[in-house]
Image 1 (cartoon, chains in turn cyan, orange):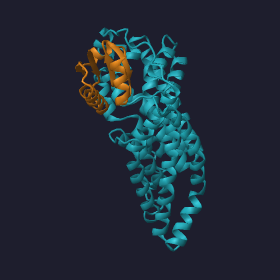
Image 2 (cartoon, helix red, strand yellow):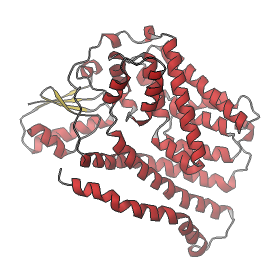
Image 3 (cartoon, chains in turn green, brown):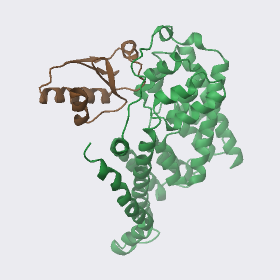
Image 4 (cartoon, rainbow over the protein chains, first blue to last red):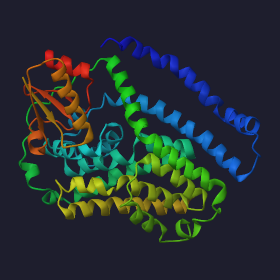
Length: 340
Length: 77
């Protein structure tokens, strides 16, 4: 590749520029709105515009930066290596490893079937495979960055830790239940060839261009959801009454947690769209636990993924999967409603 | 030359097929391109991420869409 040199130096030049813009975003936003546009401070419209003009570039900048680095790091964690690490692992240790690797191993739902087959057939236990399948979509970098951007690092950390715990425990429970009989029989009859074993050798310059590819692919896809979500957030900022959601999703309503989870299953959205919405819900009186449960259910239990997995899993196993993960999310929801 | 594109039908798999066909055509490479969508057939190549590009029964790339330049290198190596 001829552009490898520039590839490596470009980030070094851009990083300080990025930092300067990020650092001065708030004063520049305020200056734009208060002085240049001369909008009345404190008015609903002004605050809504301020919210959008500040939050949207901020979140987009965070996304771009972190997805770039995650894109590079991910080139070192191929599913093949993850599988090798998980082969023949005892349950629980295996579940912990699979959940952690699930965060960082690149995986898209269209690869769910080959990944499932590849894992199960090379001897990764079923429960351990599930830990991976639960952690991977639920704890993804977009969700974590948005949570950090809109709620701060505490909520982001809580989300990652509870998501990990759910993936570990749910996978472990599924392993204990010995549900191999509910895997479609052809799965165990398929034989892996010996073709794809060797790792591709990738030069460092190529890894960096893969980082750019990740930005193009992910940011190019999610920016519109981020914009919509933050626009809804900005709109609701001044106009929707403060405790609008309190009756339905507040702490006092005991049914709010399971209800949010049920609503979340058929709703399919990527993290980019759901986090800004959740931030509105919380602002308007929904409790943190209920909102987290809602978000986990929307991202972690998605109907399209179930439909894909139906090819390799019989229905009882899919329902068990939804049930175990759903109960995990419910416990998290109630727990956080109690603590906060 | 036998070129196979492995993918269950996601949009990335289609993109890979298009690029590969274009590279083959633009460079006048004598190649037979087949798209494999059957998961059992795909698993015989022991890959876990799609799309994958197979040249003469050897997996040369998987889980990403290589650039036209890279594909040309795979085909002329």
